[in-house]
Image 1: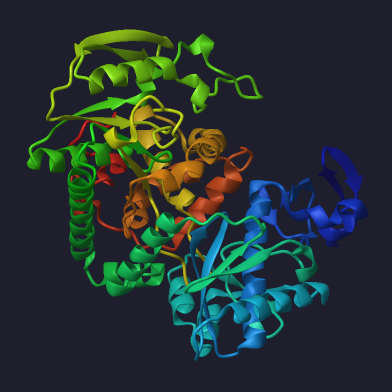
Image 2: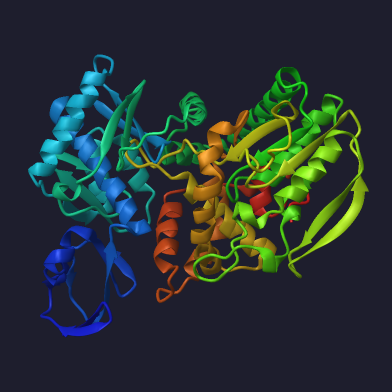
Length: 537
């Protein structure tokens, strides 16, 4: 039969394994394949004619496969050393993962060294990572028998008739996505003792993100306290009719955190005149800014909100990306001289004419003149708010910097984390559809450039923040599911966005549907549901 491989037509026999078609010089860099629009591992056997392309190590999908397989190697290495230990893959940390190993005694740096050496030994042994596809009911029974109840409960709510069980040595596990063929592919990784756990990463460079880590740990502890650390636990709460209770607890937590930030600012940073708020796309910056304003008003302040976007240069003066499109995420797209001159005038209670950027015309316009009074604070929202270069003229004593992101602590189970970027992309699909009329495919297509800008202009400055706010809600994907799922289903298998749409569809399938009527209109989540009480357009 004929297939089109990398745009060349070749003839093969039916049931040919894909790995036989990969050139020897490329074998180490091909992590998966796409056949007729569907993602498969390299052991997949071709049974029909169609289009075949390779998924390489440096692609986004390739990186996901590598991280997933590295996690499995880590779990298996811990099991080889400490058979009774329990591993938790908890959350992101410094381009890697924070993991905890629960054993009879506390974890030590020597333990971490031994785990790393065992992982290196296992890569040299070229151990096969095997996959069994079984009926989902059988997989549920298997994990129940193994005492892995969260996995069993997770799979019980799946709509899929079959589920995959992966095997590495004598470790059996379920993972959200495909794996590498064997451990020899895992050529680069690093471990580091990071109390009370371990930093595991595909790269060696470690940046200590103490502030971010503290926020993640606080919300991990909160999730355990309310009994919702995994999707299965959330689904159980929804089935028990406890959605309202979860919403009330989450919104109360938000109010507490907002008040904590307001008090910290007014007591520890009494000279603050400018509040700089930054965070990645769909973190909830707009609603957060408006709710923070209310807390500041309670304390007798008069906040004024502006957007850093209004200080864009005219469109023709903006830098461009390699593909020729305008790079609006770049720091060079802002008129920093105008921004700093305007802020200095306001700082000294002088009148300043305020710009407004017209996104339709791509031109700067002018609004009314603003003059700040002594009891007024300026809230400035923009992706470059934490970059010291942006507000170089403004004294540090006059600035209070806030970083906001949806830092989810909710995971599929102990071994499968949900990246915070998935939360934000699902939020953005919902909001783009309701506010712009965009399809899911259009949002997914633009997401790569959005992430590129975040990696360059936001994440390097996270630790510069005076306060970090976590905008994630433990139940939000259950609430966004009925909005986003139909949009994902509209993405055609022939579209470039299909693989990502299909992956997100499978993620949402794990969740039971949550009732959106429980969400107050003042909630950050309401910004993405489409019924916010605030002007978030």
